[in-house]
Each structure stands twice: as structure tokens, then as C-alpha cells.
Length: 196
Ligand code: GRF
Image (cartoon, rainbow, N blue to C red; front, side, top):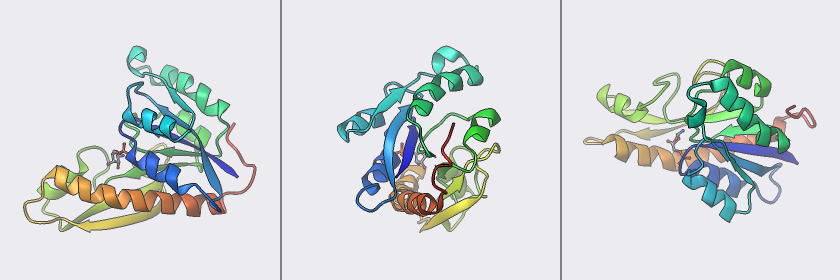
């Protein structure tokens, strides 16, 4: 059984979708939900689902990413995950952290990569006059919102769409795409090549 740690920063709706999908004959189970924000709503939802949680507030580290990540690594490594899923995790990770998990770390990004890496993806797509938007699940590499893609889902951009309206339409697809990609990824991940 593959062990999955999920990193969140906010409400954790993608974390909930992932956790709910890991049942029955699914080859993975959630073993930890960790956040950079002790007040993240997703931590309460994880606890309600019986999943162990951890929180390391990034603010006291005042931009010292390596020190913050060293603290965050503690509960993550203690959970002995085989796979790390970033799900609404809003901190940029250092190359050192990424290299430790390279090939075993996934992220969901709310755009049709390679279009619109970074933030405010929905506003940018609307302002560009695009006819469609969507989300992408990809392996995390040292380059932000880059890395091999596992899947994408597309939605139409409708006349008069606000960024919030588009975000809500995309989020529905995120909750379908991410569990689907995680299952395929977990199925083909070699046994025992865990994260140390
Ligand atoms: C989602 O749009 C996701 O694509 C982005 O963060 C947003 C919130 O995700 N990474 P969640 O509800 O916290 O999972």
C-alpha cells in the first residue's frame, strides 16, 4: 500500500477529493495532511476524516525557506510517504526539497499548462480572451509549475465569466482530475522506492 502525504495551505477541497478516492482496491492511502498555515480549514477536514495532520507556520521563518522546509520535513518524513501531493499548497519549494521528492511529488495547477504558470491564472485567461481554461496535474520539478504532465481537464470560458465563476467551474474538474491522476501514478510507482 503506497503512503500519500498531502500538503495544503487553505480549504483543502482537493485534499478531500484525494483522500475520499483512496479507498477499497486503490493502491494508496493518505497518511498525513500538512500545512504551512495552522489555521488552514483543510486541517479540520483532514482530522474529521481521521487523517493525521501537521502544521508548520511559515511566517516565523521570515522568508528563510530552507529553515521552514527543514521544520516541515520533520512530520513529513515521520509519516514515511511514498508520494507527496501538493494540493492548494501556496509556498514555493526550494530545489533541495523538490530533489528529495523528485519523481514522487505531484501538484495540481489551475490552468492548461504550459499556459499561465504562477498566480491569478483565471483572470489572465479571461483577459487574454481565451475560449477555454482548465487544470493540470504534473510532477513537481525545481522549475515552478513545470514538470511532466499527468493529465489535464478543459472547461469553456463563458461570456461575462468572472475569475471566481471560472475558478469554481475549474475546481469541479480538479476534483475529478487529481484523484484520477494519483491512482494512475500510484499504480505504476515501483514498490519500496520510498522517500528518505
Ligand atoms: C485550487 O484552485 C487549486 O488548483 C490551487 O489552489 C486552489 C484551492 O485548492 N492549487 P483547495 O481547495 O485548497 O484544494
